[in-house]
Image 1 (cartoon, rainbow, N blue to C red):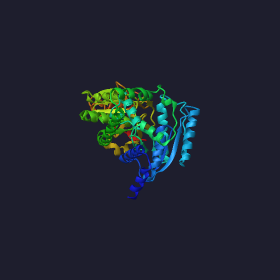
Image 2 (image 1 turned 90 degrees about the vertical axis):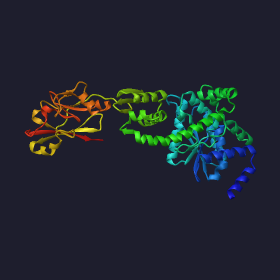
Image 3 (image 1 turned 45 degrees about the horizontal axis):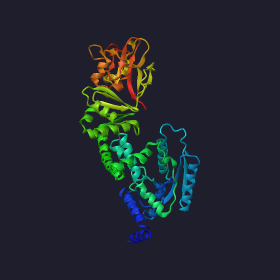
Image 4 (image 1 turned 180 degrees about the vertical axis):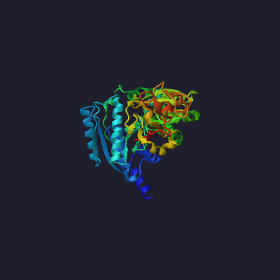
Length: 478
């Protein structure tokens, strides 16, 4: 009751429009659970109307959640004296409100690609670093419903799906909050003018060189005039609906990924049959999730790339590939493998006898151990399996060589009546194509004497009468 009375007194001395705006911000904060009592909130203030309004609103509302505020300003160093004037303005504003001030400078002169995107990425990296270091428990940004509408329309025009249309998140899982996300820009200007609060205008916001500014100053006003006066609200509702769907799909993806996706080193594997059997909406989401995991973060893969992967899974044949930005997708038998492209250079090594030789491009090694006849009994049960192969040392001719499988390779494994192409053995054993390139083969001067998994060659396999035996085994290595 004491809090209710104090808030009524707090509001009673404020203009009616301000009361409405503060009420709506409180509703947004509580709806999205932006703050917990005692949060330390760094308010990112550029000096523009939105962020200045945010700072004043949060200063008014801070007692409600016992917030400790500070002011954070990022100088992009792109506008010379104007950038320095913005920093001075925000520093003075923080001092006038008796709040701690932090200034951070960015160097974007050498940033590649889109300057807007580079600046955004640099800001987010700094915010996340500040949160991780304990600078604050929350960082508040001044994005508005108008920003949300512009972002939704921008992403729609670029062909984004529901994930992209969720646009600007009110709260991120890393601690960034946007309390003004349900307030439109004209309301913010009215709030500041009504209270006589000054702000800075960034001249670059008026230029039409940037796509977002063209949407803000040309496209949105035209659509609002000619099609829907409440377009900003409609687009914001689209973001809200998409965000709710994303929250549902996030939980669903955790279940589907656990069931269908397998990590194998840098690669993600998924059963083609399982993917093809999923409802299309779920299959698309699962592929996008697999791309994210294989890429190690956001990817520029689009609708067409995802469709290519799903089409690859639906084929009746068990081979094929698709190229994605930064990834290669290959199918072999019933498996799809998504992974960054990796070179598969041929190798030919002279292995140490005795010794251990790592197989290039893999996580295993081949061990060679030379044994006298009396020592071979411990290997007797393994002569005909893939764990250990026993070669008659005296039947081997010339130096040994460890190399990768090559198309056309063939030999006669022990227990098989005739020579077979190793490719045929691969197919019968359902060895995926991506494992074959580095597949180890041991040769002597004349022929193949051992192949991983398929064992020793019949002509040189050790027997009871072998006086000296070369034991060939496989070891996992890191």
